[in-house]
Image (cartoon, rainbow, N blue to C red; front, top):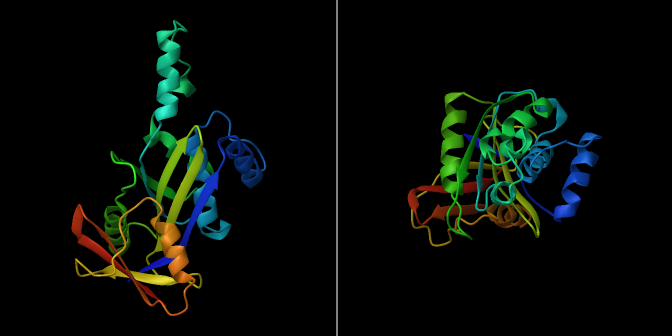
Length: 224
């Protein structure tokens, strides 16, 4: 059985992201890309300090990816500014974000980035299926699934935290569901916000997620 321990969303103005990181760490995270800062904020909010050393995987998707960082680097190159600084190049590589997160999340063993190509659509069902398999196999004690996006207008992070065993903070359990459930929610970036709202409804005992692209990966959430 797989258990949901946290579901939440974070929204920050672009200028507020560094200060939010400073408030969480007590110091700034220097030369870190916005996506890395957003990933760190969500990871720390997902896991209490006593569980940050446990074997953990991070699966995150993004619609925009490091588009701003890549565009800024290309503009500098085209303007004859010479070779980019190493940290500017690293900011364009989302897969490397885990290296800057790990000192604050020592249990982080694996991180995977899934780029998306269509605004408004996500692949939460894929992330949850992969997380469920890893937890069932005992590879990790917990898996964080996220959708992270940073643009000139601000940053948004949507998070689901899963555990392979029941904890006091567990809110629901997850299991495969029958495809084409009439009340299935769409697979959109803000799905964790819908889950959080569902958990606050006292009479709602079941919630279904189904992606049009992956109907066989439909998931049922059941309250505990």
